Amino acid sequence: MLGKTLSLAACAGAIVFAGLVQAGAQSPPDRRPFEASFGDLMTMVIQPRHLKLGLAGQEKNWAYADYELRELQGAFRRVAHAIPVYRSTDMAALIDATMAAPLDAVATAIKSADADRFTEAYGQLTATCNACHQSTGHEAIVIQVPRASSFPDQDFRPRR
Ligand code: HEC
Image 1: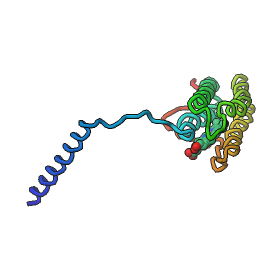
Image 2: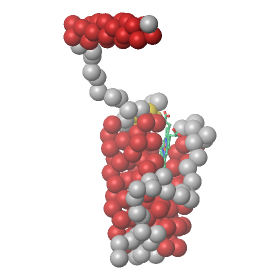
Image 3: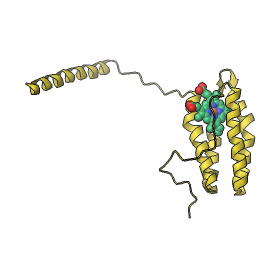
Image 4: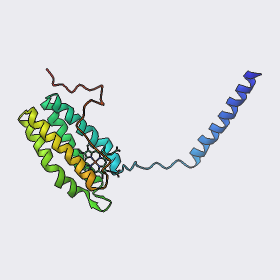
């Protein structure tokens, strides 16, 4: 009896499923490119690179820090290119005006393999993230120097 009920239910399920598949075949679902918002891009490409750069510096892994800094610079360029205007603010200009100097300072610290200088410059960079959040009415978004890795599968220590 139970077996019969179950197979009936399975049968009904199969019919519904077949119906859905057929509906799909008649009018293929529209596939549209995913349009990332400014907040999506911040979360997807800026935040992880800021974090990895911080961990690289804390580990004095200068070769990797250099790589990750370039990634972060490139990511800012791509974000500005993708969304040049955000709520009537020229984001490309704002990113350039605010981030260029702190990114350069981090680059200098990495080139001179100077941990203290890196800590200082990275702190400045992080403060600039927050300055932009404040100036765009997003003071609730507070970025800090990372204390732990959210990438347990990646080793941030220098190679030896
Ligand atoms: C030019 C201005 C600007 C700069 C510079 C900037 N941000 Fe943002 N950020 C924004 C704006 C605007 C938003 C909100 C976007 C939205 O949700 O519409 C945002 C959102 C975010 C969010 C999403 C918050 C969440 O919890 O979902 C994160 C994370 C973030 N920013 C990280 C950073 C980091 C890290 C830096 C520095 C390396 C940085 N941002 C630099 C403007 C900026």
